[in-house]
Image 1 (cartoon, one colour):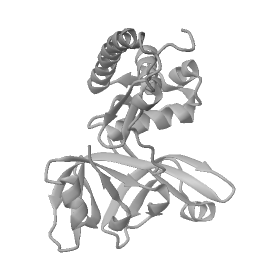
Image 2 (image 1 turned 180 degrees about the vertical axis):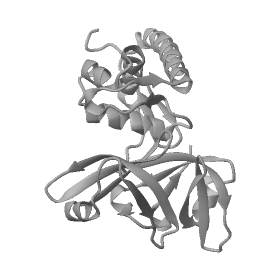
Image 3 (image 1 turned 120 degrees about the vertical axis):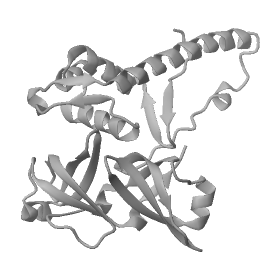
Image 4 (image 1 turned 180 degrees about the horizontal axis):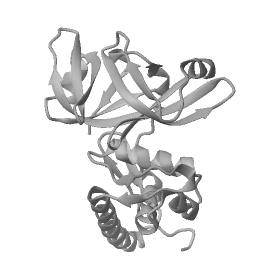
Amino acid sequence: MSEGDLSASLILRRGALARVGLERIALVEAVGELGSITAAAKRMGLSYKGAWDAIQALNNLFDAPLIAASAGGKAGGAAVVTPRGHAVIKAFREVEREIGAALSRLEAGLASAPDQGLGDLFWSLGLRTSARNALRGAVARVGEGAVTVEVGLSLGDGVEIVSVITRHSVEELGLAVGKPAIALIKSSFVSLAREAGSSANRLSGVIVDREDGDEASEVRLTLMAGKTLVATTSRRQADELGLSVGESVIAMIEPANIILAVE
């Protein structure tokens, strides 16, 4: 391909902020072929943690897991692509082919007028966020209130989280029972405890990973099949609570710290 050839990078969006690009699709395909996250990560030139994070992000953001993995960690464990995962791969590749064909036609049409400001014509509407957690669910209830409103978001398997947003935001986002939405939660807003506190959002989970730094620890919890939650706490608190892989813990999030987004 010459320097002036027109090219495109496909990113599919599910919901307002979920982004699925070629790298993640290729990772899912590699898992399907090799049956192992460890082997797929090696093929893709990723660390095991990088591959695991990408897979968990996909599982969180879709309405059903794309990959189901059994215990094994870095030493290796069985992993399979679910029917939902195969459907996503198929959809991505079909859209990719259609875009490729359309791009070829567009390039031919622009050949006679090469200086048409293509950089301004082709741009991405994708949005990146620093929120460590992006959980897709469906609106279960919308409360009443003149200024602020409680919105319940069902994550599946009977797990619900509550967000408090303004009435104006509810109307602007068009939130209604049954409508899909994404909850954005900074990991620093997730508090961990052995016993449930007073927060409206108290989620029971099992620790599946802990990564320590000099001052802070990042802890990943499994909430249910296909959903995870990441919390960042001080290293001292993590040690005092005895947070270890396999241990049960309560995650608490204040409703005002949960941002909702819709497609």
